[in-house]
Image (cartoon, rainbow, N blue to C red; front, side, top):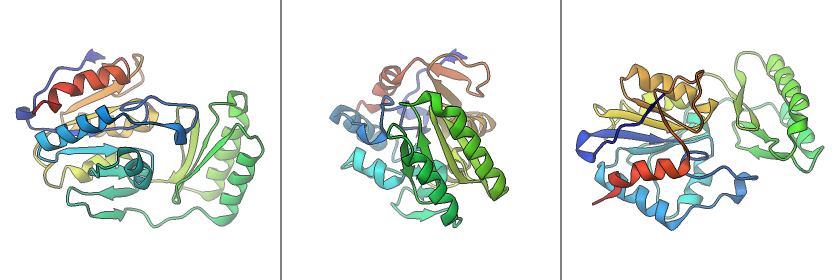
Length: 246
C-alpha cells in the first residue's frame, strides 16, 4: 500500500467515508462514540466545497449517524447500504428482507448470556460486539455460522472488528457507492473511499474498478484490496483538512 496523494476540491472528487474507525476512533461500546465540533465543522466545509459530493457509508443506521453528526444531514448509506439517502435528502430502504423472529430471539438470548456482549439491533440486521469478551468469539462465530446456514443464501455473516453481524446478502458498501455514482452530484467525479476494516472491502473493490482511490486506515494489510493507506483516524483528519478550507 502507498501513501494517499493529496487532492484538492478542484480535482472534482466524489468522497465516500466510513465512520467508525475512519472518522472517529472505535470505542468499547458504539453508544459511547462522541464526535467533536471540529469534525462536524470540517465535514460541513468539505460538503460545501465539493458541491455536495460527500457521503458517509457506514454500518450504523442513518438515525444513529444523524444523532452523532447533528446538525448535519449528509448524503449517506446506512447499515452497509441497506439504507440510502441521496443528495436531495430522500431516504429509502434498499432491502425488504427481515430477520425471522425465531432467529432474532436466538441472537438476543445469546447476547443476554453475558453482560459484556453488546447487541446492535438495526432492524434489517443484528450485530453482536464481543470486544469486551474476546474469549467468546468462537462460540459466537459458531452460532452465527449455524444460523446463516439455516437461513440460506438470503443472509450472510459480516465480519468486523470484534463484531459479527447477520444481515441480508446482496447489498454492501460497494453497491452503495455504485448507486451514489449514478446520482448527482457524484456522477462523473473521481471516486475516493476511506475505510478501516473487512466490512469496507466491497467498497475498495468497486473504487478500484472505477479507477478511484481506495484507502485503508490502520496497519498495512496485504490481504486488503485497498491501494493506499492512512495510519489512523488522526491521519484521516489531517488528509481531509485541506479539502475543508474555504
